[in-house]
Image 1: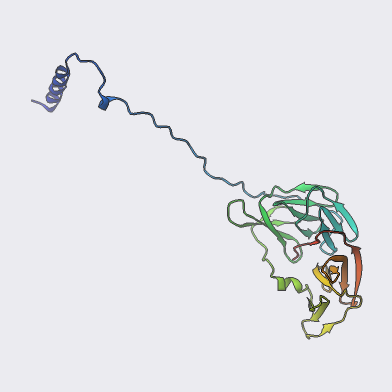
Image 2: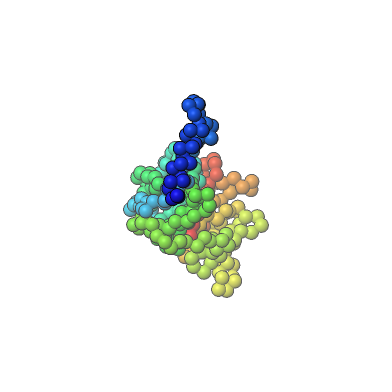
Length: 255
């Protein structure tokens, strides 16, 4: 007898043994349907391929500072309210402003969003031709570079400066403050101190706008900001630029 014949006889015997009984065998019932909920994979929008740039009347050679939503540029003012300026960098033709984790750009005539959110820091290189944007949208810090002339994304980043490097100017000078807050300038090649006429008795450095020109805020004995001060080391003199209102003074993150 062939294997096929045996299989058919077995099937017939199973049917006869079942008789005419009715009902459903639990073992033969179809299994219950299991519902599986799909969880979308986590995705983070990529950094923009381009960001706004401009040709406004501002450059890294200008003294720029901010209070609240007002940006001060060499005596002029640009009100960016309701944006509250937390940090900024000056580039040729405009200013990139950080507020509540979002990066904005202004050419001093209008304010535009860059599409960058979750931003924790901004930095520019020596000639402000390259912008570094640090964000944590993906859960970890990631850095994206941009050409500040074209707005295009770049692979090359900016090396973040240490506080000591920020005190050093692009030329041959280093600015420190004495115990009572007076600015003290040292020529690095010789170690000589350079006297400055009109230097405030209490001073907090803000940045550099040339090889021998730096600026900051003059404060009272309690540390309250009073005036924006510009110091020209070549001329060995400091001058008062703007009176400061209430509230913290913000300087650019610098180069």
